[in-house]
Length: 145
Ligand SMILES: [Zn+2]
Image (cartoon, rainbow, N blue to C red; front, side):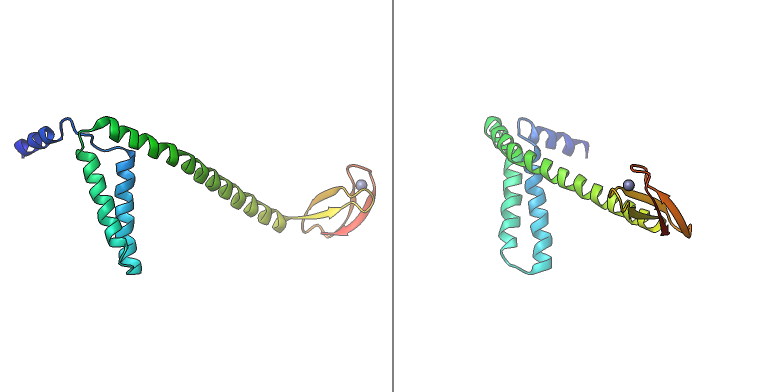
C-alpha cells in the first residue's frame, strides 16, 4: 500500500494536478451523467466522456503554463458569473425575508392613511374602534382595527 502511494506520488510529480477548471470539468461530467439518467438524451454521454477525458488530460499534463493560462481564462469568465449568481441569491433571500416580515406585520397590524395629509399610519390590530391621531398633521379620525 505504502509502495503504491509512493509510486502514485512519483507518477504525479511534475504534473499539473487539479485546478478550478478541472474541478468544473468533473462537475460537468457528473452533471451529464445525471442528466443522461434523467432525460435519456443520448448526447449527454459524449459530453460526459469528453469532460472527463479533458479533466484527466489536464490533471496529468506537464505543460503548466498552458494549463495555467486555460485556468485563468476560465476563472475570468467564471468569477463574474459566480458573483452575479451570489448577488441574485442574496437578493432573493432578502425579498423572501421582507415578504414574510410584511405578512407577519399584516397579521398583527393595520395600515391606515390619514384622510387629511395622506400620512401612512400603522396601528396594532384587535383594539376595536379607536381614535387615531395623525403624527404629522394632528388630524384625528376614527377607525376600527
Ligand atoms: Zn395627517
